[in-house]
Amino acid sequence: MALLSLSGLDVRYGAIQAVRSLDLEVNEGEIVALLGANGAGKSTTLKAIVGLAPGKGEIRFAGQAILGRDTEEIVRSGLTMVPEGRRVFPSLTVGENLRLGAATRGDPAATLRLRKEVETLFPILAERAGQAAGTLSGGQQQQLAIGRALMSEPKLLLLDEPSLGLAPQIVDDIFDLILRLKARGLTILLVEQDAVAALDIADRAYVMANGRIIMAGPAAELRASEQVARAYLGIAGEHAA
Image (cartoon, rainbow, N blue to C red; front, side, top):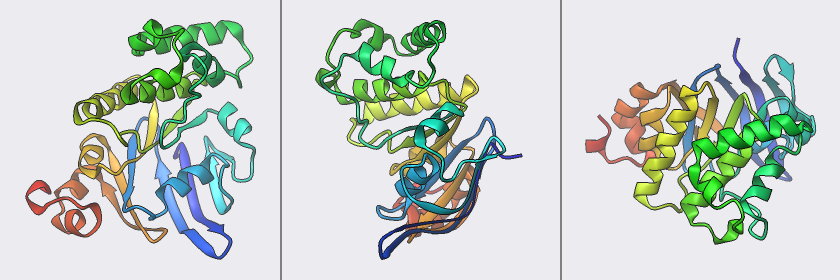
């Protein structure tokens, strides 16, 4: 049984239908990439999953229907999103941002354990614990945003454009980190503009256009498809194979 399944998901903002009859599954232990051009509906899909966008249809997580539930309740169930643009609280310290990530737990011992795990994964966050989050570099803020999400001890992590605005070397580090998270047993649904990098680390992928899934399959097959590369992902033909 899929850890996350979306069936017939529709999301509408007034007269604009952003997502149309979308079906998608994420199995435990996978990295699944959700790809497509700007405006395809990818980020809206993630927001609908965590209760931040109005949706109709069915969303099930760990066997339970979650569409229509409060975001806090969804996070408590083990599903957390790292939003596009990182969205750290710039005036709060790194440590305060991390503690906010554990706000739904209400267990001081678990919070301390998770804080140690996150700081082991991201040593820079331990070094900068007392520093204002807004003074960190873009890459450090992305580490903080992911670390803050991990403080809720999710079973499934939604990542929305984690490479956005970062230097190429930092992007490589972020994708290495995503693979390390998978190796630790975390399941990941990844929205990413860098389709080549996403397909290189994903197990499976879906391609969206105009609010619909237009193609799906093993990431390696989509990575090798020149049709997909040219038509949907903006990858030059010589890089498709």
